[in-house]
Length: 529
Picture (cartoon, rainbow, N blue to C red):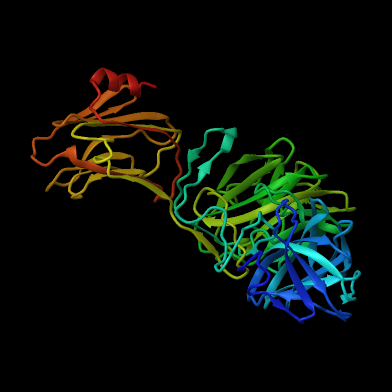
C-alpha cells in the first residue's frame, strides 16, 4: 500500500465523525503515531485504503489501546478478526487467522492472513469483541500499516506516494552462508521455476489434507519469520499427510522435489511423488533428529536422493529427483511416520500426539535442488532469472593490462561453463565450455588451451599471458603454451563474466586476478593441490 503511515492522505474515513490526530508517541519512541477517535456515538467507523489485492496476503498494523481496548481489522471481501490491544489477546469473532505481538510500551502489532480477492484493508476501533459501536471520545492509536504477499508480516516497509519494497531485489547479489560460514560466497544459479503454486500456504485448496490437521504460522521458519506450518496426526487410521495433487505433467522430464522440515513430537517424516506412500519402494523416510534417511525407496521411483541440508535451528531441507513417467506419480506428499521403516509406520491409527513442521515446498525441472523460490500465485509458477556477475573496464580500473594472470580454484564438481573473458572488440576470447578452457584469437576459430578433469575432483587452474605467450596450468603442472604472434592479441581483455547457464552445480572457491604474468615457478606453486 501507499502512504503506510500517513493516514490523512489516500486513506478514507467512513464518516466525518472519525478524526485523526498525528504526532502521537509511537511504538518506536518517535512522535509518528496517530490517534483514531470518534466524536459521536456511532457504530462501524473505519479507516481504509482503496486497494485491490488477491491471493495469500497479510494485513498488519501497530495498535495501542486508548479509551477502548479493541480493534477489528479487515480485508474487504475476504474476512476479519478482532484483537484486544490492552492485554494482547485475539478475539473469538472473525473468520481469518490472526496474530498479535507485543511491541512494548502498550503497543501491539496485529495481523490477519487471508487468501482471496480484497478491495480494501480496513481498521475499525471497537468497544469489545464482535462490536464496533463507539461513544463520543472513544479512541485508539495506530501506526505503520502494511499489506504484503505471504503468510507473515515482515519488517515495516515505509511507503509514500509509491509502494515500498524490501528484501532481495532485482540486480542484487545473493550470498551463501551454508555450512556455518561467517564469510559467505557469491551464489550464482541458472534460471529455475517453482511449479508448486502455493509453496508455503499448505492450507490452500491446492493441497489435500488427509488424517491430519494443519496449524499455520505456528513457528519460525528458515526465513526467520513465523510462517511455518505444524502438521499433526488425528485419530483416524491411514496415512497422515498433506499432498500437492495433480501438479506435474508425467512427461519423463527430470524434476526435483524438496521441502524444509523440522522435528516436533514426531521424529520421522516421509515424502514421495505419489498421492500415497503405497510401499517401501516409493517412500523416502527421514530422521529429523539425526538428519539421515532411514528408507530411501528404489531408483525406480527416486533416481537421486539428495543429501539432507542442515539449515540450522533444527531445520533440514530434504528432497529427491525423478524422471518417472506415470500419471500415478505426479503428486508431492509430505507425511508423518511413526518409525524409521515403512512397515506399519506410515499407515497407522493416530492419536493427535505426533507432529512436525514444514515450510517451502518446491518442484523444479533439473537433477538437483536450487535455492528456494517462494510461490504464492495460487494458480501458476514463479521463475527465478539466471544469475551472473561481471566485471567491466578491467583496463581503465587498473585490474589488468598488457599482461595478466587468472587463477581459479574449484570444488568437487566442475560445471559445463562458468566464465568468459573478452576484449572490447569481442574478437579475442578466453572461456570455459564442457570442461574445456578454450581461446579465440582475432580472425581464427576456437582452440583448446587445456581440458579439466572429470566430475568429482578438486582442482586449481591458472591461465597467464605475458604479451606474447598464453599458458595454462593445472594442479601444479604446465599443461600447454601457445605463442601469439598476431598484432591483435589477448592484451586488451576488459571484461570478465561468471555465470551458471547450464543444468549443473559447482563451487568456485577462489578467483584471483594478477595484473602481470606470474613466473612458471609461481604458477606451479599456486596451482599445486
